[in-house]
Image 1 (cartoon, helix red, strand yellow):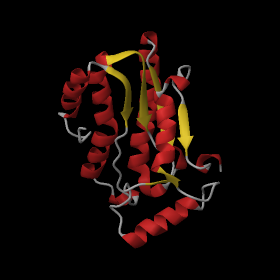
Image 2 (spheres, helix red, strand yellow; image 1 turned 90 degrees about the vertical axis):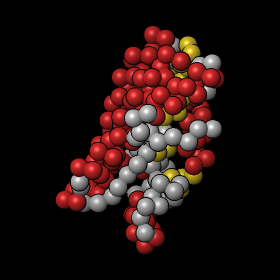
Image 3 (tube, helix red, strand yellow; image 1 turned 45 degrees about the vertical axis):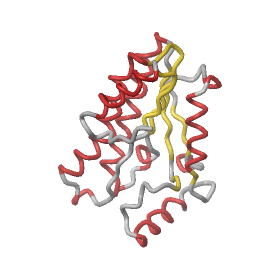
Image 4 (spheres, one colour; image 1 turned 120 degrees about the horizontal axis):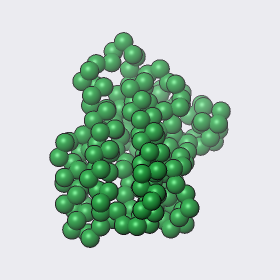
Length: 191
């Protein structure tokens, strides 16, 4: 197992070495994510650049370097976020970064389709992970309660529920699925 920082400019090269040792790739899940929450007036260049480096540049460069090692019939899953659609005022830069991933995933699906390589996007809503641990406990609880109130199923999802959809997209069971977006959001986006 390789722990890597998608924002690092050396990330793609490190991943390439590991993939070469494996003899190529049947599947690839680009699952980077970094967010800061705050009003637009508090957005800084450093914060914006950090999110774009981890959430956009990292996966783009990783896929660019790893594409030659993707075998025919391989599947690529890109993790975006329901934030790209929610218009939540406190996450504008994060939402923009995940919206960029959605756009790129569609372009990548078109580019790789001639090689029978599928690219799809996973669009999670609120999922119980350590993703919001940068918030203090009261702020995290308040943020999560506000989001959960918008979810049709009235709960956050689990990492296992999101992973199950990613595994479906990586499997041969989704052999005729390309350029799609799969919301794993408990019905958040339908409200």
